[in-house]
Image 1 (tube, each protein chain N blue to C red):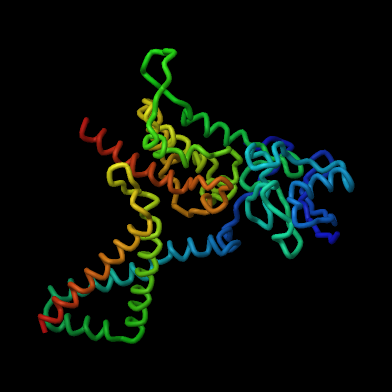
Image 2 (image 1 turned 60 degrees about the vertical axis):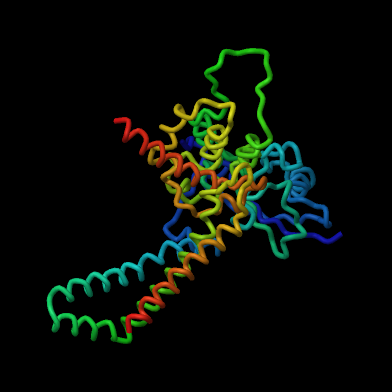
Amino acid sequence: MAKQSSYLPRLTRTWWLKHRYFKLYMAREATVLPLVFFIGCLLAGLYSLLQGTESWAGWLAFMAHPLVILLNCLALAASLFHAWTFFELFPRVMPLRVGTRTIPASFIVLGQWVGVVAVIALFAWILGSGS
Amino acid sequence: MSTKKLSIQRYLPEQEATPYWQEFEVPFDDSTSLLDALNYVKEELDGTLSYRWSCRMAICGSCGVMVNGIPKLGCKSFLRDYPDTLKISALSHFPVEKDLIVDMEVFLDHLAAVQPYLITNAAETDEPNRQTPAQLEKYKQFSDCINCGLCYSACPQFGLNQEFLGPAALTLAHRYNLDSRDQGKQQRMPQLNRHEGVWSCTFVGFCSQVCPKNVDPAAAVNQGKVESAKDMLISLFKG
């Protein structure tokens, strides 16, 4: 605890505006906001599907609104940015070893991106063959 | 020899209740460290300036200060790398006693809390405690900490809550937990599992950026989260 003769400046609410590093950290944390909107859209879609044709058409019209498209594009960019930060941090949190050798971090990061591409390719194939 | 401006935050509680800034002009060349510059100020310009230092070679961890708002070791920062005035103040998030001297008691308390030493069940013998290079490699990076406290000044979570055990203490706990000669993990886990243990860390990661010994405390703390989660799951199944 601070003694009588010492002083301890308190951290202000704007502490994160002081460095680029902190701003990037806050950007990473803020990616949750557009993602919450996207999840809200998905849940509303499921709900309207249960409600019937009219409700579903209403949801489709809502999703086609330019502002909604813009927010969902933002959500996509935010999730990719978050994925990038997560993939970079992952090898530091879970260093993987094979026998006595540690797998280089760059391999793990690359592996995760390969996973992303594989999932996108799988969905593109499923959606492509369905139409 | 050219000169550079240092703006130093002074705090002299017996004279003024609040800190103030004082400017000094110091000569420098390519080899002048910030610590050299502070020594010049004290010897030639103002003998009342107070700061800590000892080894001059990034081993003792005494000369930590904020340089333009970023925690640095005075001996490892060079004036040549700063084109403008250097703004020097005491390490953030610690109570300032005088000028650039902070009270690190809270940090030392957190260090002691994680029992950062080998705990063994075996009876003491004169036999050497053998370890293979692979076993050493597991924790070696985390054992390079010099307790300089820069990571605490870089950590906003510690700035917001001084009860958070913080980067260096949690790193040392992890370092001993990873040591093949140690059997004290079960004694340390309750400290790591606390809210003020590993779970107060939000992986800002600035601690690892400022660490002068490349210890990567953010990695250690977050590896500690994995260990803490495992520990909690195991205790759940044990009932």
